[in-house]
Length: 270
Image 1 (tube, helix red, strand yellow):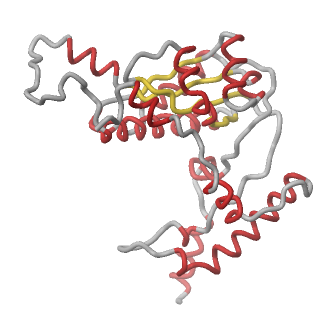
Image 2: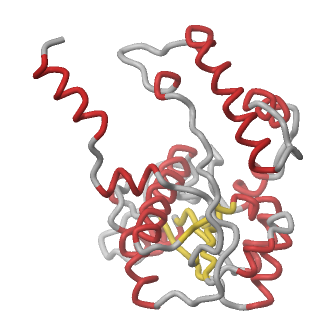
Image 3: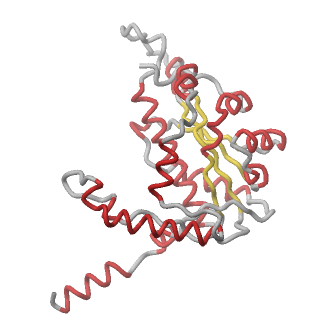
């Protein structure tokens, strides 16, 4: 490699802009200072979420800010006893929302019932649920990055789906609205190490999929890296590889109630 090419390669590897640095510094924060978040900053975070890409411009997202102390306590319990759900300065619940679209369509003067025999159940297609959940994920990640740019920390809370029916009732969610996850937000009162991610060659391919056996050595090295990370983080209380963690998850049935709940809300029925 000549000097010019070597210099270009080194530059592309070493130089990062502020956005990339922020993204790569992400950590889940579970202990927060008891310092309130400025309401203007909270609104900025939500507006950043709204700026995310949205499938077919449906904007199928609603966010519920939970400030009621009793509801917060319930959410913490339903999420598996996660105390930071109750103690974080802010707790938001991100919902896939097709109810708004259904109502607005019904109010159109030009709206004509479709000839489809399933039209009595609008937005019941699985594809519509998938695109709504994608919208929520993109919206929430924009919120997370915006919050972190304001020196705040966040933690996603998928545990609200443990008792999703209770969460739905507490938030008074109508049909076609599903709570997907929560997010704790606040000023960090801890500085945990960043959890190592898979090497890029294990997730980024060109033209065709690469089977895991083709990069098994890389995976084995990553396993040992994760094992060391857990041992250091827990002071020896946890010692497992990523593969061992996956094996435990694969052997455990989680939230078997989800399909029934989605159907009860009129979603993913066909």
